[in-house]
Amino acid sequence: MGETPVPDPLFATTTMVEILLRQHLLYDARLVLDQLKAREGETPELCSLYIRLDAMAKQTEPIAVAPLGSDRVHLSDVDPCLRIEWEVTDMGLDIARRAAKYSGKTIVRLFSAFLGPRGVRTSSRDIDAIQAAARIDIAGLVRPAVHVAAAGFLCNTGEFIPIARTDPLIIS
Image 1 (cartoon, rainbow, N blue to C red):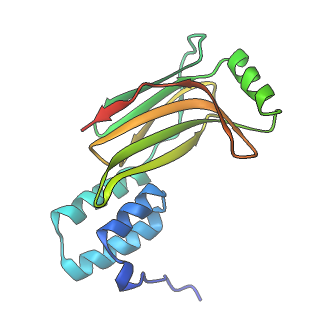
Image 2: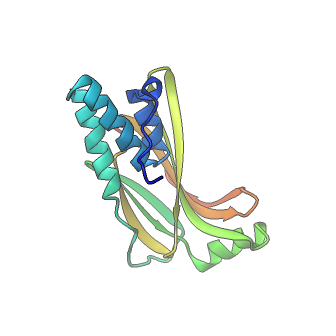
Image 3: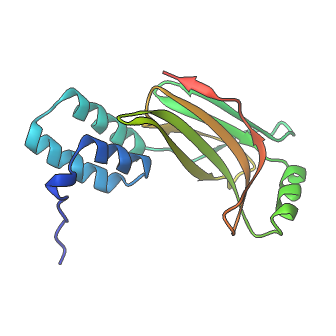
């Protein structure tokens, strides 16, 4: 009891680290990275993964911004981060809540697509939109990639009702 679990060497691969990072399982990703480093030494790929892991660990919380009075979402590449800025008006949120029968929460969903070792991979991440108008910088994302974000209402049933969305943003 109290011992740190050691990843099975069979699963200690850079692909496993990528999977763990996409699922935001940072502690497990660090364990696998440490095991890879002990086995293979410091390679450029491992250094890159450590940098992504550290950036994700320092992830900021959403920061409130001045509302403009319209439902909107904006993506921008602020190297090394992806910035998402959103606003959800009371009217837009009321329409979505009625469609959801008032059960759920307001979120911003980030959808990403990128090339992996076996073709195109996708991931999505939900960010609680506690403030109606805010921004967040997300670090540690795979590059190059295509991202789309949407602000909306996530029903307790799992259905997502978008209120506003972005056009695709390609970052390299």
